[in-house]
Image (cartoon, rainbow, N blue to C red; front, top):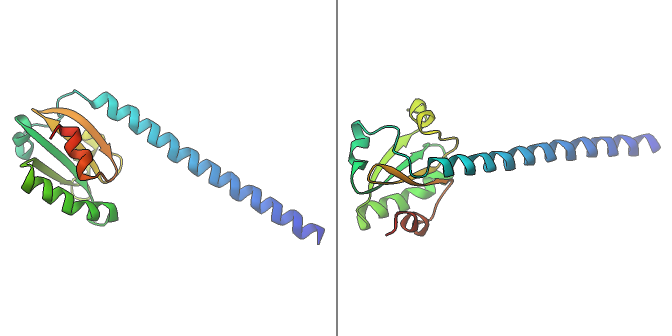
Length: 140
């Protein structure tokens, strides 16, 4: 009986150590992304040709998504509503089809939204955002 309890405590300690490492990694990744997104603010978009040329003037949104991502699917109605109501120019980037483009923008996860005004980055949002967050970020 004494050996079984020792084994149980050993397994519990290993489990909690692994959980601690995992949570630490997630927290550090969020902190890193926060600093990185603040550094991007005010800088010009790294790419202003092709479909991104529409974002040179006015307010817009670069939306990075993946078709298999559940939060991305939840954001679809919000993006469509913003295009119709607020007349925001949206460039949608499927990261599974264009991973090099996501790397160029420094996108680490989907969904990610880069709010743009006159070709300059206003705000970077990691994860799903509400319609209000996007409107507030663009000053609508």
